[in-house]
Image (cartoon, rainbow, N blue to C red; front, side):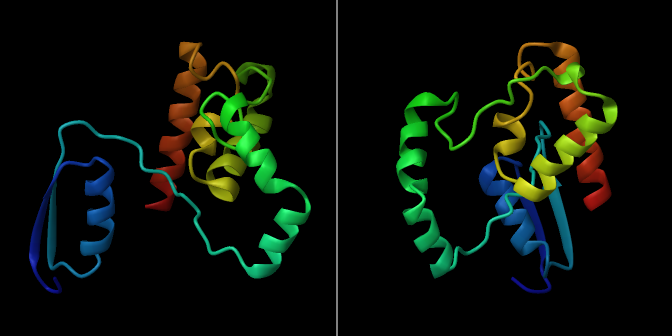
Length: 138
């Protein structure tokens, strides 16, 4: 689809993925969106053979499967046992950077402070951090 004018309707999961791929080569890209959503970096990468051996040796896979039944969302991580505003602004910024940039994926939403979904001010703080990050990246 090189050098084409392209329109994408919607910014759900498929729309976001399509936009990233076809947008590179399009002469013009138009996106029709009713409700904006966050699309944060996944930080996916290939795992090399040495990492796999190390993970197996350290019980990583067994622990991962155990966490499916014991964490909030069934991932290999859970909320930080601390409330948002118990941390200083500097600590929060460093923590958000760690989750967004170093970790990526769903950790920003599911390994964040424990009051993220229970306290409106905490939730707004997280939304602001994500928006600020995305604005600096794109």
